Image (tube, rainbow, N blue to C red; front, top):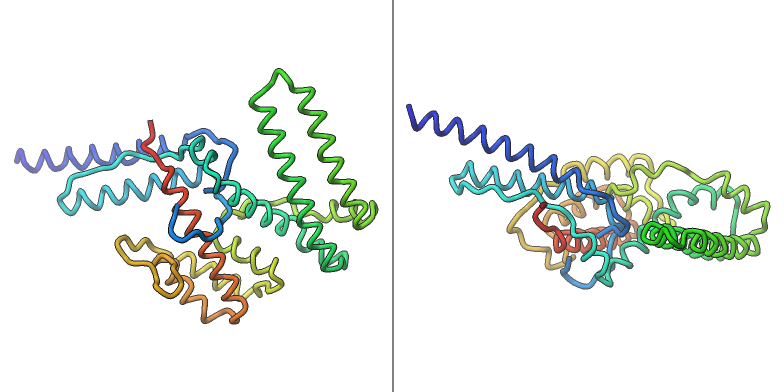
Length: 284
């Protein structure tokens, strides 16, 4: 009887710890810096929103702990959070931010580029300038958040920087066309952190956009992703086992050229996830 009662109390305690860990993990403050390991030095993938990263990592860790307890190991790891300061000080973090800006530009302006019949040269240069504009805005906003005493000076510098980029864009495509481009900008960016959206944007930038059927198939394939702890990375693609499964399933739906781009996207994603994992620390 005592043994049964002890088991019940232990289970209740574990459930309490699990939900407490989830809540503490999802309440971490947001900070600037990206998207966010290290197998081969492949380029990084766009960093996901920090709250999402923390919640998912904490959940995965706690779920693993519960599985260990059920198997008799009786261990529950603490909830995790991202050490943003350390991650942002890593030189690799800028490559993740740069990729995030590239994808943001494609998401916001990709359809508009086509509608306005811009030349390939204009589109390539526009991508650079719009990404530069976003970087400038982000850096000045971050600076303003850290130094309220110089707010007016920072605001003027921010405006001058943005106006300088806007002038270059106007010189490139004309003021009227630039005004039309801004009116056509897509505002919603809610799904940019999702893996299949990253792949779709990379393929679009490469001139190999997914069809509706391909996008749906890829969404379904990503939805089937499952952790494969202990499994070795593919010797052929260097992808972690779970991403290798996704790549193999995608081969049924993509052309060879699309698969080449998709493989690069998955390598970026793997590098990003390793980067994030490296800077996860126990939540305080």
